Image 1: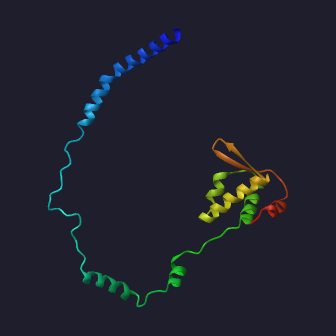
Image 2 (image 1 turned 135 degrees about the horizontal axis):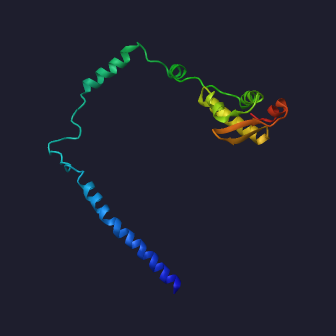
Image 3 (image 1 turned 180 degrees about the vertical axis):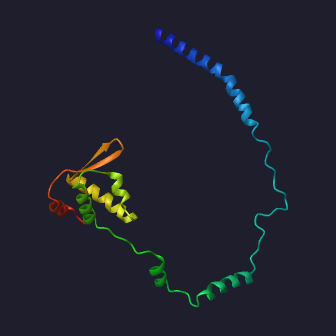
Length: 166
């Protein structure tokens, strides 16, 4: 019985709070409905979705301009070698060596290691190197006030690098 009466008092208090706020909400709602200055007008019946028609001559002229620019069309192999940049591959072992040599001078910010990267593949190699070095127990990542710091825990660098699989 006591719990039931407490629940009723709680509901009554919530109901009174809603009653006090309801007039303000009504005013805001009416004001918001007035923001629509004009209802959308229907399109005239004569309007078409897309009126331009391509003539066959226009298409042939455009195709002729494409073929007459360079004399001959390049072979697909030529396009692949000139248009697509060469992939830059980074070895996880080499990147780990770089990280360990950098950490010998002391700890560094994790973001700094990523800022030094010049390409996406180098970022991936850095990420994989950090994971490998953490799993081997060679480095430690700890929270710092400005971010995360990476510390060299210790060990022989050559032995650590030999354990990393490519």
